[in-house]
Amino acid sequence: MAGTRLYLVIIGDIIRSRLRQERAALQKRFQTALGYSALKFADRVISPPTLTIGDEFQVVLPPDGPVFELLAQFEFSMNYIPFRYGFGLGGISTQINRKAAIGMDGPAFYNAREALETARKSGFIYHFKGAGAPYTQTINLLLHWMSLKRASWKLLKKQSYYLYHHRGMKQKDIAHRLEVSQPAISRIIRDPAFGLTVDSSRHIELLWREAQG
Image 1 (cartoon, one colour):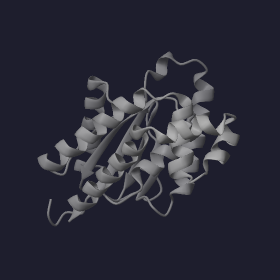
Image 2 (tube, one colour; image 1 turned 90 degrees about the vertical axis):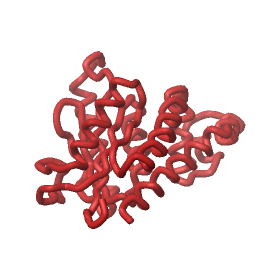
Image 3 (cartoon, rainbow, N blue to C red; image 1 turned 30 degrees about the vertical axis):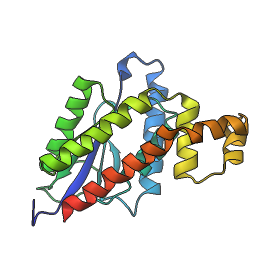
Image 4 (cartoon, rainbow, N blue to C red; image 1 turned 180 degrees about the vertical axis):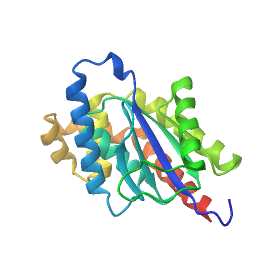
């Protein structure tokens, strides 16, 4: 991919969305969460998170974009309704749409779509395609580990993860906000998998940055 500008496309969709009750309320919340993410990360994305078809959204970032920070904030806003994600790294062959992540085409989108379909079939939360075999294998090993671990986390642990690692809140403030004891939050944060998830996401983002060269 030398000489080609790379973009990271994320396509996300709600898992088993058609089985959920109150779909009108769900769609409203979905649009609100995407709008908030678009505002919060406006200066750090190429094309903002955009509702596309059904219960899917797309966002285009540079390879050094805040991928897991954006997804963590979005999932918190959605109160952790389960999503799956396809990550695609590659070029974009059409004009970039800076206002919405629609109306574009190219390998980054093909890779993200294929990655999402693989995630659906395999049952993982995350899957990635692009950047050549060495990067792809390493990134997917980490993503699949994160998928399995996060699938076992209860709501309190997911909320604590976001507030501690992405909002930088202190344990006592997290406990107050989530209406639990501080020792309960301390036990969550001391879990080795808690820190390993952060380290894994940072290493994945490093590999994406290095893929651009």
